[in-house]
Image (cartoon, rainbow, N blue to C red; front, top):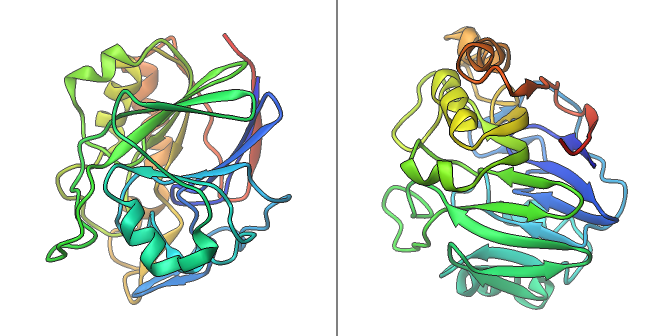
Length: 253
């Protein structure tokens, strides 16, 4: 079984077989024009054994948040990202392992394998910093798929069956661009991956300044909308909708 705490957006503290992993840490209340609008500021129970970074976008690779972790915390990043991480963090970067889809690393008592994701590879719209976005399969007592940020792709069917899917179902604004999953598409993703349990993430935490009253349904509702669509498209998947800061223990199917 695995124990997890969703700290909002794509930040998940995941424990499996005594190994503690942290995904895409965003540990502060403000990022550029975004504000944390729901959930407490994350308080981690200790130092993670490793941090898994899915792609270069600032809301997933947040250097200010990485600096809040113990110095030299091991990082796992997409192939092509380590040079940027080492340049910005310097000695605090510690071990920085690059993975391409299909490559894997052992961390503690779990195996972490990079898997594809369909998402923009750049740091920003006009940045020359590029690294293909990835997700991760974590194999320990359970098999967990952390999808990162992605649109639908056919190879999702090759990932399963998985015991747990940490699946993005929204974003941080009133619209979603290409390379993202909305609730219906996220339900199709967990169907393809044959997920026994799914926890929706990447919604309902950060929102642009001044947009609180614009499309509040896109902020608060994606988790429940995903659960409704998953019940229809993937009736074998149990959905657990958390609020930022909440925890759950998921048993292996």
